Amino acid sequence: MMRSLYAGVTGLRNHQTRLDVIGSNIANVNTVGYKKSRVTFRDALYQNLRGASSPQGNRGGTNPQQIGLGMNLSTVDVIHDGSSSQSTGKTTDLCIQQGGYFIVNDGGRNFFTRAGNFDFDQTGNFVNLANGYQVMGYLANANGVINYDNLVPLSKANYSTVPPRATTSAVINGNFDAEIPITAPGNTKTVTKSVFDSLGYEHTLNVTYTHTAVNAWTVSYALDGTAGAATANITFDPDGTLAAASPTTLAVSSAITTGATTPLALTVDFADITQYESETTAAIASQDGYEPGDMRSFTIDVTGTIMGSYSNGISQNIGQVATATFQNPAGLLQVGENMFQFSNNSGDPQIGAPGTGSRGTIIPGSLEMSNVDLSSEFTDMIVTQRGFQANSRIITTSDEMLQELVNLKR
Image (tube, rainbow, N blue to C red; front, side, top):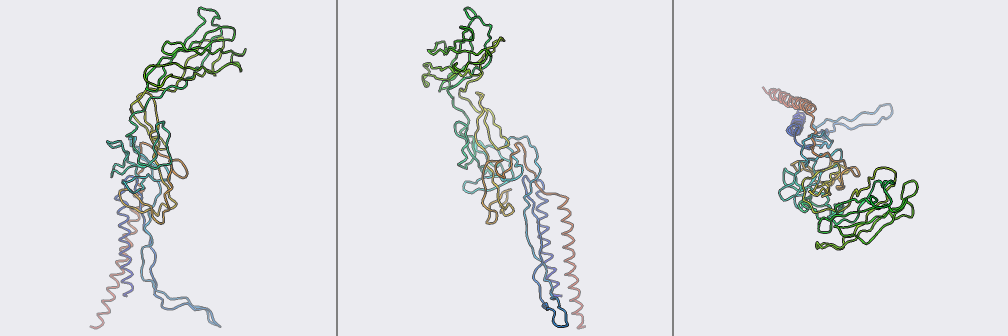
């Protein structure tokens, strides 16, 4: 009877622990990125009353006789299965689709979380709103190229402006009308485009093409009204495409007085020009320079890349959120505030860009919901309650039997 009392006590104690875990799960049913836990049991030690014997002679073998001494906790597992995403409409809210964890840092240690409720603070740091820990990732250089060699705290503080870029190339495409006269007047067309020097000053580039002979044209330029020295003579094949021997570029070089790098030199590419009996559509379609600009907005895409949009029309990478995966996520150590640390059994974090390796992509403007299933939790609660009640009956029944034994003295 004493054995049954203590067995009942182990049942009460461990079913209470299971109810504690269920209670925590239910309390966090609306906690962003929360991962539910579960409890499993195992039987405890056994008292051997008689060992087993093997068959001998005309006698068969006998089985061991053992009495169980109750039960113990087997595991308290964290279930890291993903959950559904909830759209928030807030650009900096991030949700990982499938595997991986965000990395946040308290100034000395990295932590891992599925809760992506992030934002930029007043100094431009990208932080976890719950505790101010900085979100880790990779920053871009001045040209928008992301450096994947260094994992650093993300910040937009140094990306509020984009410096100017001097124009180095321009592209002319379209058609020269074959019916344009060969002799003046009317045999000349001019196209115009703004280009920029190294300080961001704007200059006017005029490119003039003159019909000089059948299937032959001269292309010249002027920068800010000053004619250039180079002249390109181009020719077309009878099918209206540039002849193989014809030049396809025009070198522009002109002195400027703004204090920027001088001369302003660029290459005009017209390899795609045609000459058909059709409307003249030739124009300077693009050039690669720009003036300085201030950041007006930013976006985050499915790879976690943060891109700034500037007042000069340029969009450029600022940085990229990093994520980490583990060989055994269930081995992560919970430290509260929706965060985990790696442990001896989780494996080292495998850190990289979202969408690479086994790391999932990002859903911007969304948060991952808790993976707690209330129907399952309530069912487990009922089962746990019945288990607790049954074990309490073991204790009360054992007590009544002991009372009867004491009453024998009367």
